[in-house]
Length: 446
Image 1 (tube, helix red, strand yellow):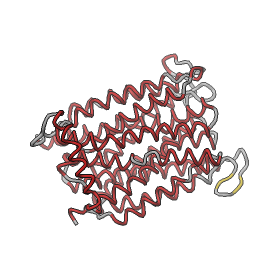
Image 2 (cartoon, rainbow, N blue to C red; image 1 turned 135 degrees about the vertical axis):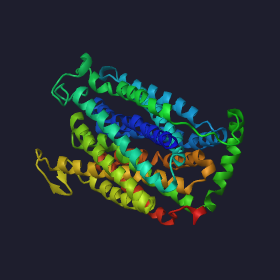
Image 3 (cartoon, rainbow, N blue to C red; image 1 turned 90 degrees about the vertical axis):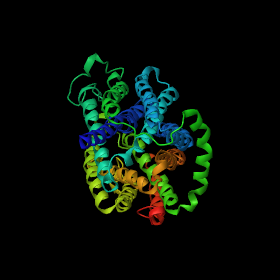
Image 4 (cartoon, helix red, strand yellow; image 1 turned 120 degrees about the vertical axis):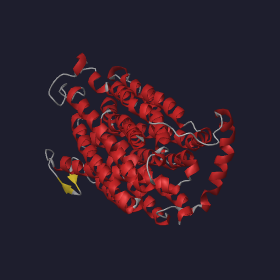
Protein backbone atom coordinates (compact mmCIF):
# COMPACT_ATOMS: atom_id res chain seq x y z
CA UNK A 1 0.00 0.00 0.00
CA UNK A 2 2.80 2.41 0.95
CA UNK A 3 4.68 1.49 -2.24
CA UNK A 4 1.56 2.18 -4.33
CA UNK A 5 1.11 5.60 -2.70
CA UNK A 6 4.79 6.43 -3.32
CA UNK A 7 4.48 5.47 -6.99
CA UNK A 8 1.32 7.57 -7.38
CA UNK A 9 3.20 10.48 -5.85
CA UNK A 10 5.96 10.09 -8.44
CA UNK A 11 3.40 9.92 -11.25
CA UNK A 12 1.64 12.99 -9.90
CA UNK A 13 4.97 14.83 -9.91
CA UNK A 14 5.60 13.70 -13.50
CA UNK A 15 2.24 15.12 -14.56
CA UNK A 16 3.50 18.62 -13.78
CA UNK A 17 6.15 18.22 -16.48
CA UNK A 18 3.44 17.05 -18.92
CA UNK A 19 1.07 19.89 -18.00
CA UNK A 20 3.60 22.73 -18.08
CA UNK A 21 5.71 21.75 -21.13
CA UNK A 22 3.39 23.31 -23.78
CA UNK A 23 4.38 26.80 -22.58
CA UNK A 24 7.90 26.02 -23.77
CA UNK A 25 6.98 23.95 -26.80
CA UNK A 26 4.03 25.89 -28.18
CA UNK A 27 4.42 29.46 -26.94
CA UNK A 28 8.15 30.08 -26.61
CA UNK A 29 9.56 28.01 -29.45
CA UNK A 30 7.40 26.55 -32.19
CA UNK A 31 4.05 28.32 -32.59
CA UNK A 32 3.71 31.70 -30.91
CA UNK A 33 7.30 32.92 -31.37
CA UNK A 34 7.22 32.41 -35.16
CA UNK A 35 3.71 33.89 -35.24
CA UNK A 36 5.09 37.11 -33.73
CA UNK A 37 7.70 37.21 -36.51
CA UNK A 38 5.01 36.80 -39.18
CA UNK A 39 2.84 39.57 -37.70
CA UNK A 40 5.68 42.04 -37.13
CA UNK A 41 6.97 41.25 -40.62
CA UNK A 42 10.61 41.84 -39.73
CA UNK A 43 12.56 38.93 -38.23
CA UNK A 44 15.34 41.15 -36.92
CA UNK A 45 12.96 43.57 -35.15
CA UNK A 46 10.88 40.70 -33.71
CA UNK A 47 13.99 38.89 -32.45
CA UNK A 48 15.20 42.09 -30.77
CA UNK A 49 11.91 42.81 -28.94
CA UNK A 50 11.45 39.12 -28.08
CA UNK A 51 14.91 39.13 -26.52
CA UNK A 52 14.30 42.20 -24.38
CA UNK A 53 10.92 40.87 -23.18
CA UNK A 54 12.14 37.43 -22.10
CA UNK A 55 15.30 38.94 -20.62
CA UNK A 56 13.31 41.35 -18.45
CA UNK A 57 11.07 38.55 -17.15
CA UNK A 58 14.22 36.61 -16.31
CA UNK A 59 15.56 39.45 -14.17
CA UNK A 60 12.35 39.49 -12.10
CA UNK A 61 12.50 35.71 -11.62
CA UNK A 62 16.15 35.91 -10.58
CA UNK A 63 15.46 38.52 -7.90
CA UNK A 64 12.49 36.77 -6.30
CA UNK A 65 13.27 33.04 -6.68
CA UNK A 66 15.69 32.48 -3.75
CA UNK A 67 13.64 34.69 -1.41
CA UNK A 68 10.38 32.88 -2.14
CA UNK A 69 12.20 29.55 -1.88
CA UNK A 70 13.45 30.46 1.60
CA UNK A 71 9.91 31.43 2.64
CA UNK A 72 8.57 28.10 1.37
CA UNK A 73 11.25 26.15 3.26
CA UNK A 74 10.59 27.92 6.54
CA UNK A 75 6.78 27.71 6.25
CA UNK A 76 6.63 24.23 4.68
CA UNK A 77 4.02 25.48 2.20
CA UNK A 78 5.46 24.86 -1.26
CA UNK A 79 2.10 23.67 -2.57
CA UNK A 80 0.45 27.06 -1.94
CA UNK A 81 3.08 28.71 -4.12
CA UNK A 82 2.44 26.14 -6.86
CA UNK A 83 -1.28 27.06 -6.81
CA UNK A 84 -0.57 30.80 -7.04
CA UNK A 85 1.93 30.62 -9.88
CA UNK A 86 -0.26 28.14 -11.72
CA UNK A 87 -2.88 30.88 -11.81
CA UNK A 88 -0.37 33.28 -13.41
CA UNK A 89 0.53 30.57 -15.94
CA UNK A 90 -3.10 30.20 -17.00
CA UNK A 91 -3.78 33.96 -17.17
CA UNK A 92 -0.67 34.65 -19.25
CA UNK A 93 -1.19 31.74 -21.62
CA UNK A 94 -4.86 32.53 -22.23
CA UNK A 95 -3.99 36.17 -22.92
CA UNK A 96 -2.11 35.14 -26.08
CA UNK A 97 -5.51 34.96 -27.78
CA UNK A 98 -5.60 38.78 -27.83
CA UNK A 99 -2.86 39.11 -30.43
CA UNK A 100 -4.88 39.52 -33.61
CA UNK A 101 -2.84 40.77 -36.61
CA UNK A 102 -5.17 43.72 -37.24
CA UNK A 103 -4.96 44.92 -33.64
CA UNK A 104 -1.51 43.75 -32.60
CA UNK A 105 0.15 45.58 -29.72
CA UNK A 106 3.51 43.85 -29.32
CA UNK A 107 4.27 45.31 -25.90
CA UNK A 108 0.86 44.31 -24.49
CA UNK A 109 1.21 40.82 -25.94
CA UNK A 110 4.71 40.48 -24.49
CA UNK A 111 3.41 41.58 -21.08
CA UNK A 112 0.82 38.80 -21.02
CA UNK A 113 3.34 36.31 -22.36
CA UNK A 114 5.82 37.23 -19.60
CA UNK A 115 3.16 36.91 -16.87
CA UNK A 116 2.60 33.32 -17.98
CA UNK A 117 6.33 32.72 -18.30
CA UNK A 118 6.90 33.93 -14.73
CA UNK A 119 4.12 31.63 -13.52
CA UNK A 120 5.60 28.64 -15.32
CA UNK A 121 9.14 29.26 -14.06
CA UNK A 122 8.15 29.74 -10.42
CA UNK A 123 5.79 26.75 -10.38
CA UNK A 124 8.73 24.70 -11.71
CA UNK A 125 10.99 25.87 -8.85
CA UNK A 126 8.60 24.63 -6.18
CA UNK A 127 7.84 21.31 -7.88
CA UNK A 128 11.55 20.64 -8.55
CA UNK A 129 12.21 21.10 -4.83
CA UNK A 130 9.96 18.10 -4.17
CA UNK A 131 12.27 15.75 -6.11
CA UNK A 132 14.42 14.60 -3.13
CA UNK A 133 11.27 13.43 -1.29
CA UNK A 134 10.19 11.10 -4.11
CA UNK A 135 12.82 8.32 -4.13
CA UNK A 136 16.21 7.21 -2.77
CA UNK A 137 19.18 9.26 -4.02
CA UNK A 138 20.39 6.51 -6.37
CA UNK A 139 16.99 6.46 -8.11
CA UNK A 140 16.59 10.23 -8.55
CA UNK A 141 18.29 10.29 -11.97
CA UNK A 142 15.73 7.88 -13.39
CA UNK A 143 12.84 9.71 -11.71
CA UNK A 144 14.01 13.07 -13.05
CA UNK A 145 14.82 11.74 -16.53
CA UNK A 146 11.51 9.91 -16.88
CA UNK A 147 9.63 13.02 -15.73
CA UNK A 148 11.46 15.18 -18.23
CA UNK A 149 10.79 12.64 -20.98
CA UNK A 150 7.10 12.56 -20.02
CA UNK A 151 7.06 16.35 -20.26
CA UNK A 152 8.52 16.20 -23.76
CA UNK A 153 5.85 13.70 -24.77
CA UNK A 154 3.22 16.13 -23.47
CA UNK A 155 4.77 18.94 -25.49
CA UNK A 156 4.87 16.68 -28.54
CA UNK A 157 1.21 15.63 -28.24
CA UNK A 158 0.08 19.24 -27.77
CA UNK A 159 2.15 20.32 -30.78
CA UNK A 160 0.67 17.58 -32.99
CA UNK A 161 -2.85 18.62 -31.95
CA UNK A 162 -2.03 22.23 -32.72
CA UNK A 163 -0.60 21.48 -36.16
CA UNK A 164 -3.21 18.95 -37.29
CA UNK A 165 -6.33 20.74 -36.13
CA UNK A 166 -5.74 24.41 -35.30
CA UNK A 167 -2.66 26.24 -36.68
CA UNK A 168 -3.30 27.48 -40.20
CA UNK A 169 -0.47 27.57 -42.72
CA UNK A 170 -0.02 30.12 -45.50
CA UNK A 171 -2.89 28.44 -47.37
CA UNK A 172 -5.24 28.91 -44.44
CA UNK A 173 -5.35 25.15 -43.87
CA UNK A 174 -3.88 23.02 -41.09
CA UNK A 175 -1.31 20.28 -41.63
CA UNK A 176 -4.22 17.91 -42.35
CA UNK A 177 -5.39 20.24 -45.11
CA UNK A 178 -8.55 21.24 -43.24
CA UNK A 179 -9.90 24.51 -41.87
CA UNK A 180 -9.07 25.17 -38.20
CA UNK A 181 -11.59 23.47 -35.91
CA UNK A 182 -14.42 25.16 -34.04
CA UNK A 183 -15.05 27.59 -36.91
CA UNK A 184 -11.90 29.58 -36.13
CA UNK A 185 -11.20 32.26 -38.73
CA UNK A 186 -7.97 31.51 -40.59
CA UNK A 187 -7.78 35.02 -42.08
CA UNK A 188 -7.69 36.48 -38.54
CA UNK A 189 -5.12 33.82 -37.54
CA UNK A 190 -7.52 32.54 -34.89
CA UNK A 191 -6.28 28.98 -35.38
CA UNK A 192 -2.73 29.96 -34.48
CA UNK A 193 -3.82 32.35 -31.72
CA UNK A 194 -5.82 29.55 -30.09
CA UNK A 195 -2.43 28.22 -28.95
CA UNK A 196 -2.89 30.44 -25.87
CA UNK A 197 -6.23 29.04 -24.66
CA UNK A 198 -5.12 25.51 -25.62
CA UNK A 199 -1.99 25.87 -23.45
CA UNK A 200 -4.04 27.21 -20.53
CA UNK A 201 -6.72 24.49 -20.74
CA UNK A 202 -4.05 21.81 -21.13
CA UNK A 203 -2.39 22.97 -17.91
CA UNK A 204 -5.65 23.11 -15.97
CA UNK A 205 -6.69 19.60 -17.00
CA UNK A 206 -3.37 17.82 -16.56
CA UNK A 207 -2.45 19.43 -13.25
CA UNK A 208 -5.34 17.55 -11.66
CA UNK A 209 -3.23 14.38 -10.99
CA UNK A 210 -0.49 16.52 -9.49
CA UNK A 211 -2.80 18.19 -7.00
CA UNK A 212 -4.59 14.92 -6.21
CA UNK A 213 -1.57 12.64 -5.75
CA UNK A 214 1.31 14.82 -4.58
CA UNK A 215 1.28 15.48 -0.88
CA UNK A 216 3.86 17.71 0.72
CA UNK A 217 5.50 16.06 3.75
CA UNK A 218 4.98 17.96 6.99
CA UNK A 219 8.09 19.96 7.77
CA UNK A 220 9.29 19.78 11.40
CA UNK A 221 9.54 23.24 12.92
CA UNK A 222 7.49 24.90 10.17
CA UNK A 223 6.33 28.43 10.99
CA UNK A 224 3.59 30.73 9.71
CA UNK A 225 3.91 32.64 6.44
CA UNK A 226 4.31 36.04 8.16
CA UNK A 227 7.12 34.77 10.36
CA UNK A 228 8.67 32.99 7.36
CA UNK A 229 8.70 36.24 5.38
CA UNK A 230 10.43 38.04 8.25
CA UNK A 231 13.02 35.30 8.70
CA UNK A 232 13.65 34.49 5.04
CA UNK A 233 15.95 37.38 4.19
CA UNK A 234 18.41 36.98 7.11
CA UNK A 235 18.68 33.26 6.38
CA UNK A 236 19.04 33.82 2.64
CA UNK A 237 21.69 36.49 3.24
CA UNK A 238 23.64 34.02 5.37
CA UNK A 239 23.35 31.36 2.66
CA UNK A 240 24.51 33.75 -0.07
CA UNK A 241 27.47 34.99 1.96
CA UNK A 242 28.54 31.40 2.59
CA UNK A 243 28.28 30.28 -1.04
CA UNK A 244 31.92 30.96 -2.01
CA UNK A 245 33.03 28.61 0.81
CA UNK A 246 31.01 25.79 -0.77
CA UNK A 247 33.24 25.57 -3.82
CA UNK A 248 31.40 22.77 -5.63
CA UNK A 249 27.90 24.27 -5.24
CA UNK A 250 29.22 27.72 -6.14
CA UNK A 251 30.89 26.40 -9.30
CA UNK A 252 27.81 24.39 -10.28
CA UNK A 253 25.51 27.37 -9.89
CA UNK A 254 27.93 29.45 -11.96
CA UNK A 255 28.25 26.81 -14.67
CA UNK A 256 24.51 26.24 -14.88
CA UNK A 257 23.97 29.99 -14.97
CA UNK A 258 25.75 30.11 -18.30
CA UNK A 259 24.85 26.83 -19.98
CA UNK A 260 21.15 26.94 -19.06
CA UNK A 261 20.91 30.54 -20.19
CA UNK A 262 22.49 29.52 -23.48
CA UNK A 263 20.08 26.59 -23.83
CA UNK A 264 17.10 28.85 -23.14
CA UNK A 265 18.45 31.19 -25.80
CA UNK A 266 18.47 28.35 -28.32
CA UNK A 267 14.92 27.33 -27.34
CA UNK A 268 13.59 30.88 -27.31
CA UNK A 269 15.07 31.87 -30.67
CA UNK A 270 15.02 28.59 -32.60
CA UNK A 271 11.60 29.16 -34.10
CA UNK A 272 12.21 32.88 -34.59
CA UNK A 273 15.50 32.06 -36.36
CA UNK A 274 13.91 29.46 -38.64
CA UNK A 275 11.08 31.82 -39.55
CA UNK A 276 13.36 34.77 -40.27
CA UNK A 277 16.42 33.13 -41.84
CA UNK A 278 15.01 30.03 -43.51
CA UNK A 279 11.59 31.62 -44.09
CA UNK A 280 9.80 28.61 -42.68
CA UNK A 281 6.05 28.59 -42.19
CA UNK A 282 4.41 27.78 -38.86
CA UNK A 283 3.73 24.27 -40.19
CA UNK A 284 7.40 23.66 -41.06
CA UNK A 285 8.50 24.94 -37.68
CA UNK A 286 5.93 22.67 -36.08
CA UNK A 287 7.38 19.62 -37.86
CA UNK A 288 10.79 20.74 -36.64
CA UNK A 289 9.31 20.88 -33.14
CA UNK A 290 7.89 17.37 -33.41
CA UNK A 291 11.33 16.04 -34.33
CA UNK A 292 13.06 17.95 -31.51
CA UNK A 293 10.46 16.89 -28.92
CA UNK A 294 10.66 13.24 -29.99
CA UNK A 295 14.45 13.15 -29.67
CA UNK A 296 14.17 15.12 -26.42
CA UNK A 297 11.79 12.59 -24.85
CA UNK A 298 13.91 9.62 -25.89
CA UNK A 299 17.22 11.06 -24.73
CA UNK A 300 15.85 12.56 -21.50
CA UNK A 301 14.76 9.03 -20.59
CA UNK A 302 18.10 7.50 -21.66
CA UNK A 303 19.95 10.34 -19.95
CA UNK A 304 18.07 9.58 -16.73
CA UNK A 305 19.30 6.00 -16.87
CA UNK A 306 22.86 7.17 -17.54
CA UNK A 307 22.50 9.65 -14.66
CA UNK A 308 21.52 6.91 -12.20
CA UNK A 309 24.39 4.69 -13.39
CA UNK A 310 27.26 7.17 -13.84
CA UNK A 311 26.04 10.24 -11.98
CA UNK A 312 24.79 13.54 -13.42
CA UNK A 313 28.16 15.23 -14.06
CA UNK A 314 29.29 13.12 -17.07
CA UNK A 315 25.83 13.52 -18.60
CA UNK A 316 26.00 17.30 -18.18
CA UNK A 317 29.53 17.58 -19.61
CA UNK A 318 28.74 15.56 -22.73
CA UNK A 319 25.57 17.44 -23.56
CA UNK A 320 27.06 20.92 -23.02
CA UNK A 321 29.78 20.06 -25.57
CA UNK A 322 27.14 18.87 -28.07
CA UNK A 323 25.06 22.01 -27.63
CA UNK A 324 28.06 24.35 -28.01
CA UNK A 325 28.88 22.73 -31.35
CA UNK A 326 25.25 22.89 -32.48
CA UNK A 327 25.01 26.60 -31.57
CA UNK A 328 28.05 27.30 -33.74
CA UNK A 329 26.61 25.23 -36.57
CA UNK A 330 23.27 27.07 -36.57
CA UNK A 331 24.95 30.37 -37.49
CA UNK A 332 26.24 28.78 -40.70
CA UNK A 333 22.91 27.55 -42.03
CA UNK A 334 20.85 29.88 -44.21
CA UNK A 335 18.69 29.81 -47.31
CA UNK A 336 21.74 30.71 -49.42
CA UNK A 337 24.45 28.48 -47.93
CA UNK A 338 25.15 25.58 -45.57
CA UNK A 339 28.48 25.67 -43.67
CA UNK A 340 29.91 28.00 -46.31
CA UNK A 341 28.75 25.91 -49.27
CA UNK A 342 26.42 27.89 -51.60
CA UNK A 343 23.08 26.25 -52.37
CA UNK A 344 20.34 27.03 -54.86
CA UNK A 345 17.23 28.90 -53.67
CA UNK A 346 15.09 25.77 -54.00
CA UNK A 347 17.59 23.46 -52.26
CA UNK A 348 16.25 21.35 -49.39
CA UNK A 349 19.72 21.01 -47.82
CA UNK A 350 19.29 24.00 -45.43
CA UNK A 351 15.97 22.54 -44.24
CA UNK A 352 17.35 19.03 -43.74
CA UNK A 353 20.40 20.39 -41.92
CA UNK A 354 18.28 22.47 -39.57
CA UNK A 355 16.03 19.47 -38.86
CA UNK A 356 19.12 17.45 -37.84
CA UNK A 357 20.36 20.30 -35.64
CA UNK A 358 16.91 20.53 -34.08
CA UNK A 359 16.96 16.83 -33.21
CA UNK A 360 20.37 17.30 -31.56
CA UNK A 361 19.10 20.31 -29.59
CA UNK A 362 16.11 18.32 -28.34
CA UNK A 363 18.22 15.29 -27.42
CA UNK A 364 21.02 17.15 -25.64
CA UNK A 365 18.72 19.73 -24.05
CA UNK A 366 16.40 17.16 -22.49
CA UNK A 367 19.19 15.07 -20.99
CA UNK A 368 21.07 18.18 -19.81
CA UNK A 369 18.14 19.70 -17.94
CA UNK A 370 17.15 16.42 -16.31
CA UNK A 371 20.72 15.73 -15.12
CA UNK A 372 21.08 19.31 -13.88
CA UNK A 373 17.99 18.87 -11.73
CA UNK A 374 19.47 15.81 -10.00
CA UNK A 375 22.89 17.48 -9.70
CA UNK A 376 21.23 20.29 -7.75
CA UNK A 377 19.86 17.72 -5.31
CA UNK A 378 23.40 16.36 -4.80
CA UNK A 379 24.86 19.83 -4.28
CA UNK A 380 22.11 21.32 -2.10
CA UNK A 381 21.28 21.27 1.61
CA UNK A 382 18.56 18.71 2.31
CA UNK A 383 16.92 21.00 4.88
CA UNK A 384 16.82 23.97 2.51
CA UNK A 385 15.98 22.31 -0.79
CA UNK A 386 13.42 24.89 -2.00
CA UNK A 387 15.84 27.69 -1.18
CA UNK A 388 18.46 25.66 -3.05
CA UNK A 389 16.26 25.39 -6.11
CA UNK A 390 15.53 29.09 -5.72
CA UNK A 391 19.28 29.68 -5.97
CA UNK A 392 19.32 27.28 -8.90
CA UNK A 393 16.64 29.43 -10.54
CA UNK A 394 18.67 32.51 -9.63
CA UNK A 395 21.71 30.99 -11.33
CA UNK A 396 19.57 30.30 -14.37
CA UNK A 397 17.96 33.72 -14.34
CA UNK A 398 20.56 36.06 -12.83
CA UNK A 399 22.01 36.26 -16.31
CA UNK A 400 18.80 35.18 -18.05
CA UNK A 401 18.96 38.50 -19.85
CA UNK A 402 22.41 37.60 -21.23
CA UNK A 403 21.40 35.24 -24.03
CA UNK A 404 18.29 37.19 -25.12
CA UNK A 405 19.93 40.61 -24.74
CA UNK A 406 23.27 39.65 -26.32
CA UNK A 407 21.36 38.05 -29.19
CA UNK A 408 19.23 41.19 -29.44
CA UNK A 409 22.29 43.49 -29.37
CA UNK A 410 24.34 41.33 -31.76
CA UNK A 411 21.39 41.05 -34.14
CA UNK A 412 20.80 44.80 -34.01
CA UNK A 413 24.47 45.72 -34.50
CA UNK A 414 25.14 43.27 -37.32
CA UNK A 415 21.65 43.48 -38.82
CA UNK A 416 21.94 39.69 -39.21
CA UNK A 417 19.96 36.95 -37.48
CA UNK A 418 22.74 34.49 -38.27
CA UNK A 419 25.52 36.47 -36.57
CA UNK A 420 23.12 37.42 -33.79
CA UNK A 421 22.90 33.83 -32.58
CA UNK A 422 26.68 33.37 -32.08
CA UNK A 423 26.90 34.65 -28.45
CA UNK A 424 25.05 31.50 -27.35
CA UNK A 425 28.05 29.30 -28.22
CA UNK A 426 30.30 31.41 -25.98
CA UNK A 427 27.93 30.98 -23.03
CA UNK A 428 28.03 27.19 -23.41
CA UNK A 429 31.84 27.25 -23.41
CA UNK A 430 31.99 29.35 -20.22
CA UNK A 431 29.66 26.90 -18.51
CA UNK A 432 31.81 23.99 -19.64
CA UNK A 433 34.95 25.54 -18.11
CA UNK A 434 33.26 26.13 -14.74
CA UNK A 435 32.08 22.50 -14.54
CA UNK A 436 35.72 21.47 -13.93
CA UNK A 437 35.36 22.77 -10.35
CA UNK A 438 32.16 20.82 -9.56
CA UNK A 439 32.51 17.75 -7.34
CA UNK A 440 30.14 14.97 -8.53
CA UNK A 441 28.76 14.44 -5.01
CA UNK A 442 28.89 18.04 -3.76
CA UNK A 443 31.36 19.77 -1.43
CA UNK A 444 29.77 18.46 1.75
CA UNK A 445 30.03 14.88 0.48
CA UNK A 446 33.58 15.19 -0.87
